[in-house]
Image 1 (spheres, rainbow, N blue to C red):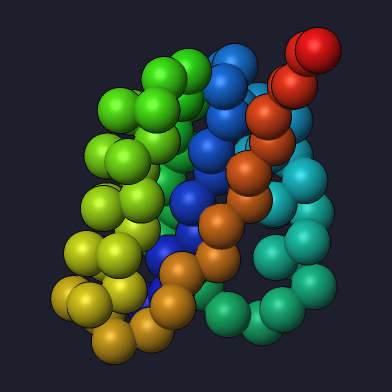
Image 2: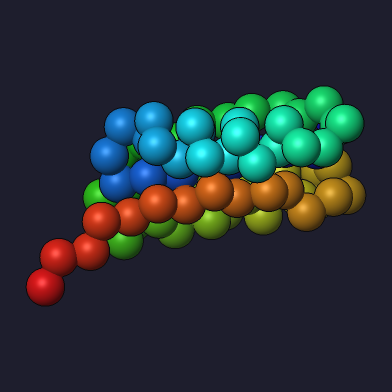
Length: 72
């Protein structure tokens, strides 16, 4: 089963909605994982490691829906 990650620096609700809408177009079952509040570089590295570990374990690249708010 393919994995879909929904990642955000907030609650990840928007990422989930966008991801679910996109994935509903495909007749495939997905293992959904939501990771909210990725607000630090350390947390981003942890999420990257989780995504890479999932890909290694399943042998399939996961889908990643990532929404971040960038302020200048």
